[in-house]
Structures are given as structure tokens and as C-alpha cells.
Image (cartoon, rainbow, N blue to C red):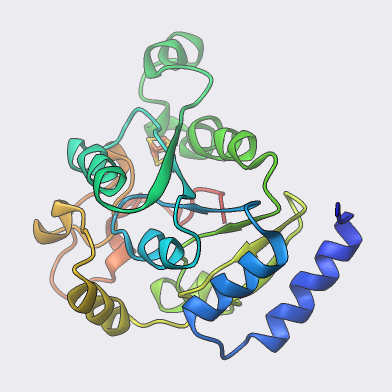
Length: 230
Ligand code: SF4
């Protein structure tokens, strides 16, 4: 059965209320009952918590990874380890232009001069293409990561993409994440053991200092806090 955007929006908004206190697995089970195989996970490969949860609900679930061309080698290695060890289908998505082609078209180091445009070209547009054909997508967004994420619901309507957005671990604290990782032996990006609190593209990510928020190392020294995906 094909659902129109109005129906989907109503489903998402109702679920956002009804599943407000649900567990991460219950959110994903709900999505699986509603949408069958037409939901996927996106992962930055900082850790494999959401892919690990999703694989319990739908073995073989699609895990979309945006390869911007600017990732740390450790992030690519984490992606490959996730693909090799979890029952998921990793789909690597790339921008239309290679870094060299983007440099030729827009000049080198666009990430320094106009990071919003760089993210639009290398993250937002490829994700939009990658999500074509899915009804719902899940991410690892958490309320405690950033003030701008503090009102994130477990299920939301993604109006920009006319899709249902699942944030199964939105209510988790860092302590919850750490406990889940320890109890389940979940894969972690090794950079998390090397001073990084949050991991994005190499040119836009630095180590954090003691006492800083986990995301303080993303686009440090600028007012930018999000890539435009969420
Ligand atoms: S995070 Fe930086 S390098 Fe990556 S797409 Fe955005 S601006 Fe470009």
C-alpha cells in the first residue's frame, strides 16, 4: 500500500506522541511493522549503536553511509568493520563531484570559505538522493548532544524530505550509550579513544579539550553546528 505524504505525516506525528517514552528497539519495531523494508539507518560511523539496534529488528537492514571524500581513514575502517561484522547492508553514497572536481569548480578548500555550501554539496544533496525510495530513516541523533537537538522526538515528520524520521536513541544520555556499547561489544571509531568527541569530516573536526562538549570539535571556531542533514 502506498501512503501519501499527508497520511505519513499523520502517522509520524501520532507516533511521536504515542511512542514518546518507548525504548529504542520499540521505536524501530514500530517502524518495521509500519514500513516493512522501506526504512533505513544512516550512520556517520562514529559508533555502530543504531546499526546494531536496527539489525536486531531487521537483519540485513540498509545502513547508509555518506562518504564525503573528506573522512578520516579510521571512519572508513569503521564502516568496513561494521559491514563485515553486523548483519546489515552498508550502502556507501558519494557526492556527484569528487573532491578534485569540486576544487576545480568552486576553488580549493571550500570547507574553509563556505562550509554550508560544501556540506550542501557533499552531504545534504547525496543524502537526499540516497533516501529516495525509503519511507522512513533512522539516525543516532540525541537530545543531550547539543542545545539545538534538545526537543528531538523519537519519531518525527521530516517535512523537507516528506519522510518519517526515527530518532530511536534521542532520549539516551552519553552514559546510556556507553553502557549499551559495553554490554553489547558495539564497534567504535578508534578516534573516540584519541581525543575526539564527535567525528565528521577531517578538515572540520578537531580533538576536544577536557570539559568541552562532545561536539565542540565540529566546525570549531565558526558558528556552524550542524551540516544541514537533520
Ligand atoms: S563537514 Fe566540512 S568537509 Fe565535510 S562536507 Fe561539511 S564543510 Fe565539507
